Amino acid sequence: MTNLQSIGDGAPLLIPKVDIDPFEEQFLLNPYAYHDALRDPGPVVWLSRYNIFAMARYEEVRSALIDHETFLSGRGVGLSDFAKEEPWRPPSLLLEVDPPLHDRTRSIMQSVVSPASLKTLEPVWTSKAAALVDQLVKQGGFDAVSDLSEAFPMLIFPDAVGLMEEGRENLLVYAATVFNAFGPRNRLLTESMNTAREASAWVASACKRENLREDGWGAAVYEAADNGACTQEEAQRLLRSLLSAGVDTTVNGIATVIYALTQFPEQWKKLRENPRLVRKAGEESLRWDSTVQTFFRTTAREVAIGDTLIPKHTKVLLFLGAANRDPRKWENPDRFDITRNTSGHVGFGAGIHQCLGQMIARLETQFILSALVEKCQAIIVDGPVLRRANNTLHALKSLPVRVTPSS
Ligand code: OVV
Image (tube, rainbow, N blue to C red; front, side):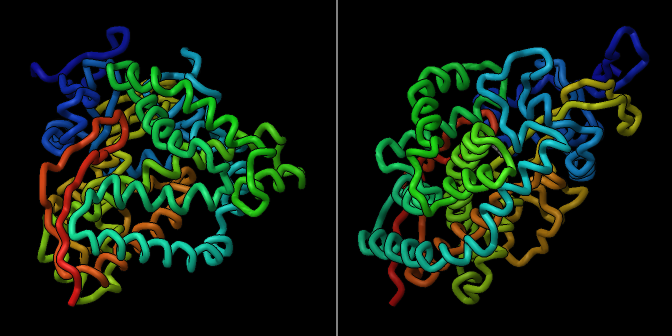
């Protein structure tokens, strides 16, 4: 049993050992080439490069996500254990906390990005999506990452928050760092940290009350503080969460669904025949290629997974992207199929930490897809598709496309 390793202080704990580095560039650029090797040896594996536990099967990933009392977030959802290492920034009051604090902050933010507030933004977002797509389709060709998937969230999201105009380009730099920081201190993180100083300073300043417009989500967070729901400092840090999680995720969510539709032209055809499938297409895209590929948890107690006992206070890496392609759960998992039942996918996570901005992400994706489907007959890749390595996100750097306008 050469692939089994004893862990702990000589404790008789046997676990399949995997020598893959999930944060190395090759892995990050194409994680799907490695997922079988993480899923097949057992429900939990030992990643010997980092001496951590990892789970990549749907059942175990989902169960861990919904069991927030056993699988804690408060010691960080990256590799770094906040109980042992100082976090690179003050911990997020949503992502990197457990109940009861989590529930208080979550409900504040839930009321800020409420369905009612989205309803009022919808008409603006729809018309901006249509105008942007219109202009790009007239060009005939464009980069679906920079010209569309980055451009659209940057057109609407900072305005919805009520951010100052100056320096908004820092948002993407900052987000790349935030998501690299969940991984190990590899070259990606080190380089990211070097460029992040300025972006972090900008974000800190952008989150101050005096720099926000009075009608945005940002001001609404501070109003919650005025009403006693949280302190002014908490409000600033809660707003930082929106800026951290709200841009790079949707950028790549949109880019990925466009990429998927170019790779599966029969699905594009199906979508054109029935544009009401845009919502399902967005959901299937998140299952097929999850923007957020991984998050960690820390065990609060000893946990039995199959024949393995994970000790308490131990980091466990959860492969959301692998869970979403687990053949134990999904039929023909590598196939992008916009009519499949995607219910239960963990692309937005699951349980109490499930993506706060999921409705925002869905709407942004739908508005872009609806505009594309209406205005283009065909969309094809017209140049090299380039990826951008990130320790957490499966990201695209460039997707050159050529479009045929609808007649
Ligand atoms: C889901 C997510 C990603 C990155 C940052 C945060 C949340 C945050 O709360 O800061």
